[in-house]
Amino acid sequence: MRPELIKVGPFTLYTYGFMWMVGIWLAVWRALRHAPRYGIKQDDVLDIAFWSVAVGIVGGRLAFVVTNWSQYAPDPLSVVRVWEGGMSYFGGFGLAIATAIYLIRRRAIPIWQLGDLAAPSLALGYAIARIGCFGAGCCYGAPTDLPWGVRFPGHDHAVHPTQLYATVVNLLIFAILSVWATRRRFEGQLFAGFLMLHGLYRFINEFFRAGATSKLMLGTFTYGHLVAAMVMVVGLMLYGLLFWQVRRRAFIDTRSTGRETRS
Image (tube, rainbow, N blue to C red):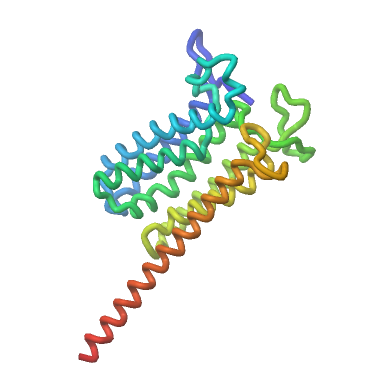
């Protein structure tokens, strides 16, 4: 655990904030490189990324503060100290997606093309950002006796390094989507795939988490489980709908071609 990466006099560079910045930078950099392949202007990518990230940070912070208000009540000013850690990923992700959809519609950008462009970048950025959570000691896991358990300051027992689980799994998701991008069969396939894979990762990882999570029912499932399940279902439904539309268009085109041939 290393919450402070560099400290020089009054200046402190926090690991949490730095790794989130690195993750966002890498995600945007990759999207800019691949934007021409999807017929999207790089200026549009930059604008949408900037506003989505800015609004997402606000949404993620507010969602975390609301669900962990007892932690901030003694010192309300700590709410604005984002660099010290404490973000609700799903809260930020939801608001960021809503912002992106608004800008996409306003600029008449093909939504599924942009979604497919963004999907691998989202997995990459998230994977790097979670290293910052490990450095800050937030989002830690439940106690474990496994040899790779980590003992954070203030804990009397080693815990699952769920932050690093997130990094490893999402780098794998990034690799899968990157390969998938070269074999894409329809628009929206990568984005729907990201929702399914990311939701599945979070649902499983939630069983090992203890920090920044709240029990919802039966003493086992959490709000994170609920949202992750919803993300998986949305991804699955979106994948099925888009795939069905492609098959339907192909069937209609085949019938039209058949009629023209017979005539």
